[in-house]
Amino acid sequence: MSGPRQALGYVRRYRAALAEAGRMRALPAAMQFDAAFAVAQQIGVTQKEDEIRWLFELVRADAPTTVLEIGLDEGGTLFLWTRAAAPDAHLVAIDTRPMGRLGLRSPFPLVRRSFARDAQHVDLVMPADSHARSTSERIQALLGTRRLDFLFIDGDHTRDGVWQDFHTYGSFVRPGGLIAFHDVSQRSTSATEGVARFWREFTAEHATDERVVGKEPGFGIGVYRVPE
Image (tube, rainbow, N blue to C red):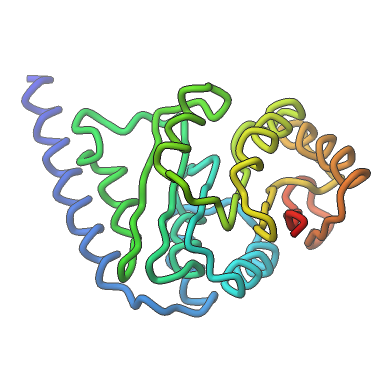
């Protein structure tokens, strides 16, 4: 009976995903941070509210038309970028999570792609290792001749991994574009010490800004504006 039960469970999850995707598509296209963050929390978001608010407003001021997020996780931040980006933005997210048995029509990607508003388009590159050449080639193919306006790096949290993501995908960002990093706080945890080390090295050589709220270990957001 395990087979029929599993099939019935999947059908229920799929129906729930269809309903959730419909709810997402019915949300207002224009949302202030508080309303957008409330939705992001329902989806799943790991950033501190005051820190991600700061970044959200920076991104919204730029109104990017091309966005890449490395480390989709549950997708809460991807939802925020849809509300901060231009109405016709192309948003791409990379994650190691498998899509599911139905590919892009599986419950998880079905809901995340429904975040798009107006004329936006969301592409999910998963399962994928951001460090693999095949992944960067796929991103380049998706972008075509366009450059990134905004890059959010929150995937591999090792020092070398963050450097590699920066060197690989930072080269896709246009002059004047914005690159943001999560977990840069120097009050690091065992899970974020690699990013903290990267940020110490990075800030020694580049003009940056950051928002670290409170004394809790981990978290913190750093930003770098690519020189014009």
